[in-house]
Length: 177
Image (cartoon, rainbow, N blue to C red; front, top):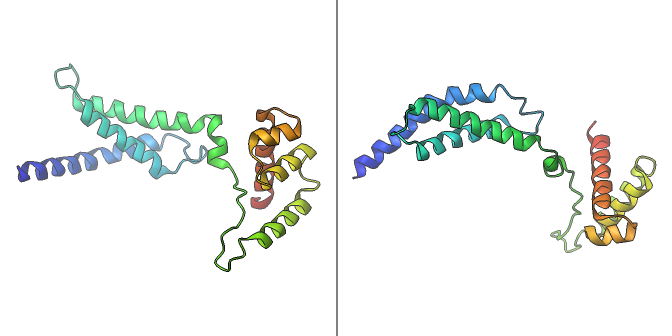
């Protein structure tokens, strides 16, 4: 029984080595970096497609494993690219965090750091953000949740979230360009 298990592992390693060049070639056909994907992540998706093919292949059907596995790999990679390209994932993939420093080892809790960060941000963004974006950012830095921020801004939740998102993108652009 132990030898069967080792034989299965050996065969799996052989399949991975056999299909790795194909997976790499499929991934190279996409502009994955533009979408915020790492090549390794995309190749992992292709490998998951191979594993799904191993689990679901039906030898009684009129197709070879080779053909079936290649289709599963292409489908997995294409699905990952399609998912990454969706606009709804931009805040997760490209968002700039505004988390403040806290729970420092010196016991200060980061209050001074938070004040310095707030003053610095206010000075930097004064002429860079719209009044709505500045206020949405201020409320976020004060720890106000989205619904309460929307109420205070007199806007819908979506409008408040969009204003904060624009502020993040503008600040990120300013910092990294």
